[in-house]
Amino acid sequence: MTSAIVILARIRSIGGLTTLTSCSNDDNGIAEPAGQVLQNGEWTGTGEGRSGTIVVKLVVKNHQVEQATVVSQSESVFAQETINNLVAKALGRTDMMSVEVDGITGATLTSTGVIDAINAALQAAMGNTSDTEKTYQEGTCDIVVVGAGGAGLSAAVAAAETDSRLKIVVLEKQGILGGNTNYSTGGINAAETDIQKGLGIEDTKQLFYDDTMRGGKNENIPSLVRNLVDNAPATISWLTGLGADLTDVGLMGGSSMKRTHRPQGGSAIGPHLMKVLKTACQKENVEIRTSNKVTGLLTAVDGRVTGVCVQNANGSSYQITARAVIIATGGFGANLAMVAKLQPSLSGFATLNHPGATGDAFDWVTAIGGATIQMANIQIHPTAEATNHILITEAVRGNGAILVNHEGQRFCNEMDTRDVVSAAILAQPQEEALLVFDQTVRQSLASIETYANQHLLCEGSTLEELAGQLGIPADQFAQAVSRYNAWQKAGHDDDFGRSATGMPGALETAPFYAVRVKPAIHHTMGGLSVNTETQVLRADGTPIGGLYAAGEVTGGLHGANRLGGNGVADIVVNGRLAGLAASKRLARSDHP
Image (cartoon, rainbow, N blue to C red; front, side):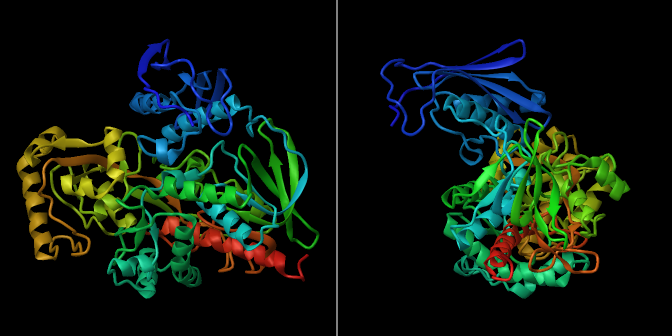
């Protein structure tokens, strides 16, 4: 074990570089860390941030990080404190960093990019070759999973658990695992779970089904919704068996009951889920290759999918022959040209998606006759921080926050479905709103602390002081909050119809907070056509042999509008089902 030392950080800027140096009270006699040892010297690693590549250099002395320097980055000035804090966390390290443990400001595109760059440098210091330096050759396996987000890793773990002899390879085009799952903050919807029962929440699968259909404007494919609802409780149990903490259950917009399962205290679900699934993959000996981009599918004469074409990080290509392929590449919310073509009204909108959400898989699948469905159904999330486009989870409203406009007035039921709330915000002056809450709400949800760390919160000791900082009429604002508090205490909102369940408390405890928000592209509901077995379908409804898909890359489940908490439910429920379906196919004697 490494001996305890005191680490101090000095930050100095030289020509745009950020350098941090650790100062130890004992530079000699430091015990070597257990496991792989960092080799002394200078080591460089790269990661992808919001605005481009981040390059970090580490100086290792006495087998620990003595100095960390951001050699280059294109992130905004707003992100500089995030970068400095994360680089400071590298000092004195002898092991890897993680988004959940070390992501001081939460899993933003910048923080995951910095952590990935630091980890790449640490891997180099340990003598490990990164995937960006490896050149993979032709090979075979039992199951190939394309995409290493929540859906892909759920599929890989579920398949591996069925038979330890299966060789499973996960391919990820980005340099890090997680995709959009890294940035998910809400939780996992499920009804009739043991956790709900233990908390006295009387929910039913039928209510869950009805809420989802109503939220999707009844454009949802009923069989897919029923499949999600029926399999969600077992998936919650499966995840908790893997070590997930889903003991906090909250309310999201469009849901009639508390059914959004998340870590205790309302912490972000995404980083926690990725840590659990990554650990499970390691336990099950699943091989994960990052920086390996799939470019197409291999097929047999009869149309069955028999593998994938892959591009190494260095640009060379290879093929993997497999008995089953699971596509879990996510949606296309970061492909703004594709979004604008399918939904012209969203041209010019910012996106909340990670850079890899570009919809690559649709070309591969349609090229072999696969069908897509409801591709123009694209969701905007109502509460993205207005300047830096950081998602403010719906759970803030679920825990009691309200929305006001620049006139200081409420203007909608804050717990309505995302499309309705987004439309209401876009109808306001400047097409934005102010998300307002008090200290009680802040203390009820750990995710809010990530927004505080990012300096997104405007704070006032009184409502009038907060109004002054926001530049809105103080009298009207105070009256609006007072009127909401009166409705909350009465148990009914006669102004906008917010339910008693959706108003857990009055906004009375100082200090008071606000975040300026506006809608941004969040989720693509359309995608590949699949059945309840997660098989990818042709236009005539017949399945393509050997090809499965799960998560945001699929369409039809959410209809015209996805409910908060159903996105992560989709990836873990259907990811797990895809893994089970693929492994079941391999076990059948009629499919050698």
